[in-house]
Image (cartoon, rainbow, N blue to C red; front, side, top):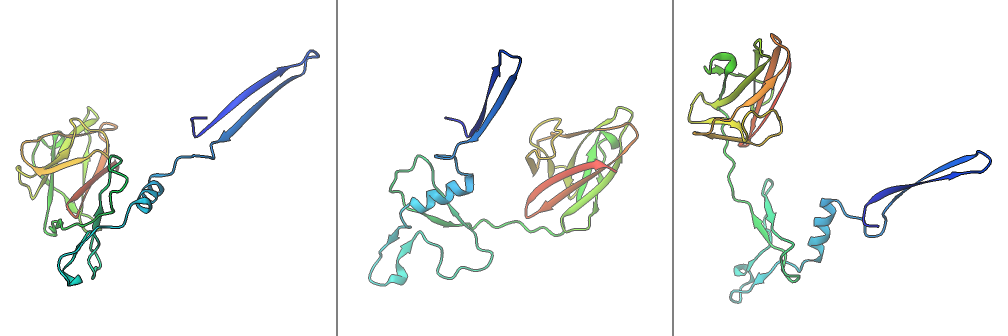
Length: 210
């Protein structure tokens, strides 16, 4: 059976007027697919250990694809592998040296059809990196908007697609030259609260009826 689970039904019609109907349901046990986390763990266990490159007689000078001897709290490592890798490809740990931009003094403004594309400064929220504002939907019941970091038109924060109605869509910015907007709809003259979260260089957005 090529599927993970399935069901089958059978009916029996008796000559005396008795009818029977049975439903069989089952789940594939042998060879069932692992969840992604288990699949990755299984893949890593099968890989050869990280490579150690011997340089001279002093082990302290050897190079290896292992985490550093003195790992500090907050250190991050990445492991790269692909289904196209040869079976004997060793495990390789690579330290993530990308520095996250810390911008505790950042501010954000919202601009859109509801305010004639003027800049309205957003109020800070209850948690660090949270910014919020409340807008009133026009008679059309819809508004388009995007954000400006530090009120700078060259630091535009917007969705990756035009007229975006998804709160989970990827967010672009801050950058210039891209002017996609979020599109929010609701009852005319109703209030909508819009919240932007900016944390460790990443954005998320949510809106709901106020």
